[in-house]
Image (cartoon, rainbow, N blue to C red):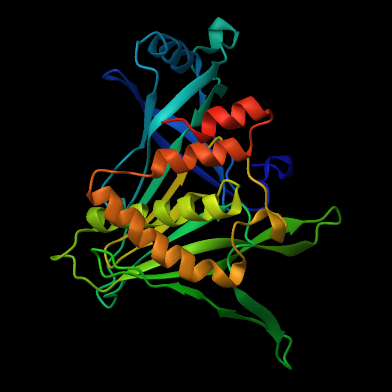
Length: 332
């Protein structure tokens, strides 16, 4: 990788050998590079480097009727990391015109792919860890959440960030502790003179933790319940803020695995809004969210889900014309 091919700050890049699949057809031993943003919702892009035969096989694979291709990293003895995506679309196949005498010895970028979701699963063995945790990264305005944190510096010059997280107390089937807090991200940046500095950014996150054992609650059930909690919280926060707030990534940590899941979401997001845009003020947000999420859960148990009505109201806020607002506000 040359200097011009360095990943952008706050973008993660993974390279691996893997398989491209569609409608039961597989192409093995392809070289993938995947890049995704750590701090914001953005397109998840992949490229494949290969030879002429690989390019021809991918072109033939595109003719299969299924809209999506699947990507999976190659597994081997001792491998602890699996990279996969079940929803990806081939955007372009580049059919190279290489001299026939070179055969398949020449390789280059032959394919561009966009992923709607990406999962990186790493097996670990941490028997000392009892608590399981999942951290959802949020996009959208932050004004609603009355969070307090600050940076201090010691006499040695070391920086320390003191965070006062916001605890959300709502009944849930996994006995989870729920907190909102900023999560800081760091990325090296190389300047024109060759020097390297560190850039800092932060993302608002929802942290959900449980002490339930793996026998009482599997990792997959924990993730599914946590996603429902995060979806409910962001739905209500969007309603109050009149702007989209959604999670675009989560990291799950347990004694057996580290799971990083990234998804592409098409909504446009803003970071800044005014107090007048909120339906309630930030100091009232915690009590409103706690009581509203209980009502949301109770109504769902009675087969009355408010998800779509709230989304329609939210879309109505952003409609350009009065007629559009009316239709969306009263859509059933």
